[in-house]
Amino acid sequence: MTGPAFLSVAFRPFFLGAAGFAVFAIASWVTGSAGGDIVAPAIGPQRWHAHEMIFGYGAGVIAGFLLTAVANWTGRPAVRGWRLGLLLALWAAARVAMAMSQQTGLLLAALLDSGFLVTITAVLIREISAAKNWRNLPVCVATGMLAVASALSHFGAGLPAGIDLRLGIAAICTLIILVGGRIIPAFTRNWMVKMGHDKLPAPFARFDRAAIAAAAIALLSWTVMPRAQISGALLLLAAVFHLARLVRWRGAATLSEPLVTILHIGYLWLPAGFALLGASIVNPALVPATVALHGLTAGAIAVMTIAIMTRATLGHCGRPLHADGITVVIYLLINFGALARISAPWLPLDYATSTLAAGLIWGGGFALFAVSYGPLLLAARAPA
Image 1 (cartoon, one colour):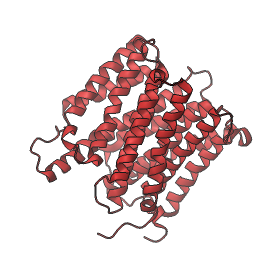
Image 2 (cartoon, helix red, strand yellow):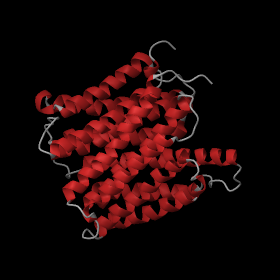
Image 3 (tube, helix red, strand yellow):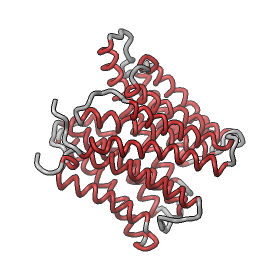
Image 4 (cartoon, one colour):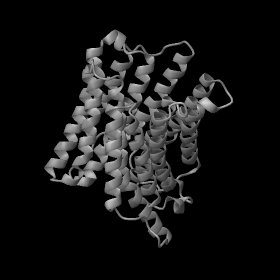
């Protein structure tokens, strides 16, 4: 391999870029709340923030992980070098165009934003098809859903309000369910065997299929009927299924290694988010909708992605699979930031101050990741 280590594997540029962008997005939201603007989106700062955390940060992490993983799944050469650089440039250009769309125009932003996800999906389909690795094709369906959601955010005039964001969140939750359902029990089993545990995570079974189906039906119902009582009931049912699924993976036995435990905590946010969202539909006076939504976004998506980012970086960079003190602080900041965000209506501060504090704590976790893991992502892999 010739060229910079930074472009040798997809997780390197996309994990660092996504973490840096998360910090920028939070900083933009904080300054906007204080009356100053560092972005000029034609869609308005509030919608820009929601859109970019899904299609900017979320899509960046997903691209980094899946482009790295697909090489392992298929045995084919990884996307790297100038090809990887072009994908990174497309993602970055979309972020700039979205942030400055008052000047550059919405059409350019739309083409770049949706074009990135269409391209990533096409690359994944090509790699999986070339290797006839059909068992991993469902991840392409999920990334395709994300691409459709991005397109709807730009070209979906006349559709129900917010359907693009709901579909985007549903697509990322689907990826968490599919990929998390594979790697969490596998990594947990590997660690438990190494530590001499005899009670191992339950293998994939019919119950897992039922849980996946329950979540798929609930997310579809919520996407198209976000206020329907049936959607709330289905989300509550999915929460029960996925909490039970998580218990079967025996995460409580991993508390001595936070690098494994955080995967279980990240997945725990998924049924918690489903439960909050279901409760907000069944009884809106009990749980505000914005609180429930942040259970899935600031909670499930953020914690699960940081869990994968830290573990993949350590493993692929040849470092010990152990969470040091700084990594634990990263986990605490992002989890506490998410908890503070969903607790904001009930904290003993005014709502604006509570959400501001939550954003700063949450963003601080990603800033610490960028500073502490950035050198690993930029440097060559440590010799074995």
